[in-house]
Image (cartoon, rainbow, N blue to C red):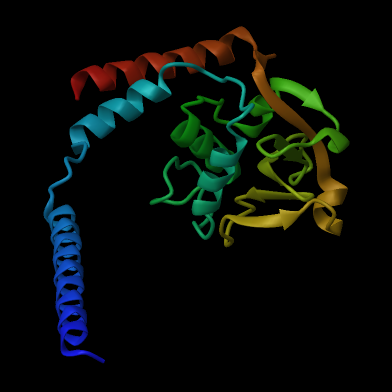
Length: 215
């Protein structure tokens, strides 16, 4: 190889090395700048106001097109212990408060507190028509619609079963739940609540709005 050619190749190698070094430095600098950048976060105050405003917008609505995010939120609560008469996962959730919490927290839908009342919200559907996000009801205390869960697909539902257990997924086809299946409902914006039940929900909406104004 001629001396001239060797020198040209050496210079080319040095040039490429310099370009690669500069590119790598620029990329590293960009990454560091991105990591150091302070991303503004919504304050607790704003989050609280936003949450309450969202919840108090409506009583119950349709879950069409929103079932995936609803199920994802429900799955995040798996493992929370069963506890009666509470409304937040930190304290524990019973059957109906688990369902109410998921719908209220993720979609801002306000459902009645009791499973028997929930059984009058939306339209009744058959077991064969079940879709993720539908409510499924059971007779677990020798009382119609005494327990409720959320259908997640593949013949399974998520719920908070009973004292001493945690939120979990069960199979509708299992002997225990198959025997006690009481029906299903799909939220479509309708309900069969009586006047006092509807007024109770409206009072809760007003209370939530008052809280949002005081934040």
